Image 1 (cartoon, rainbow, N blue to C red):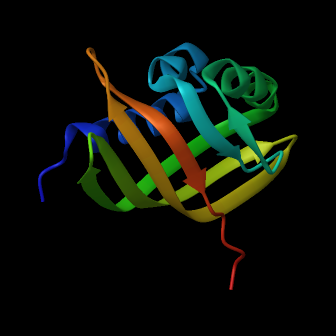
Image 2: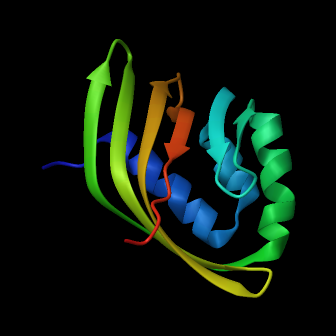
Length: 127
């Protein structure tokens, strides 16, 4: 299956996250983005809120490695939904963490690029 431009934007989002590159991450987010923050366990609404919440997290986290599998894109009325499975490892406050999280991103095409408008991951407990 061919990778869509929306798939590429989602992969770019996680690459920026792995690099702890807040400015690059911000470029991929729509101004009205809504995102679930797995660490604080709450919704973040608006690019400014997302970036403000991630800044201290980025200071506390190291060695993020994200792998996406089972990417699937579906166009819906001018938006694209990308679903995937996120396998991620990171160290936060000295503790190593590994998660597997089915993830959904909704993207909207702007004049310049696809931007994330909703992101939601559901970290699953190890079974």
